[in-house]
Image 1 (tube, helix red, strand yellow):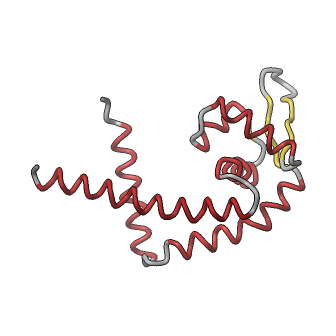
Image 2: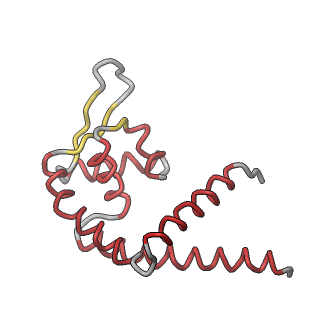
Length: 147
């Protein structure tokens, strides 16, 4: 195997392990707070971006659209979100974070941010910026490939 191919494999393994370590820690935090990662992602989207059409949420949090209804139902039953019909298009329903949902996110989001900062603190600010640019470059280049 040539060295460039070996290096690409090593990059994949290192990225996967780093992502797994961060995901395990964040998932544990979500579980401690009574939500799963998908529920948190929906709440975070609505908390920061405001009401969203149900049909668009899956694409924004990288989840299959079939799963969104189930997650929205669970969050609605817990009082974290409400469904709002679009006044101009009957085909569109929005998910909107409720006051209870806002209070929940206001309580846990700062801790989530603090923990992410701790998890990535092995890198300096400059290294984080470099990693962000490199991962963007990699992700965008993959979109151009077709297999």
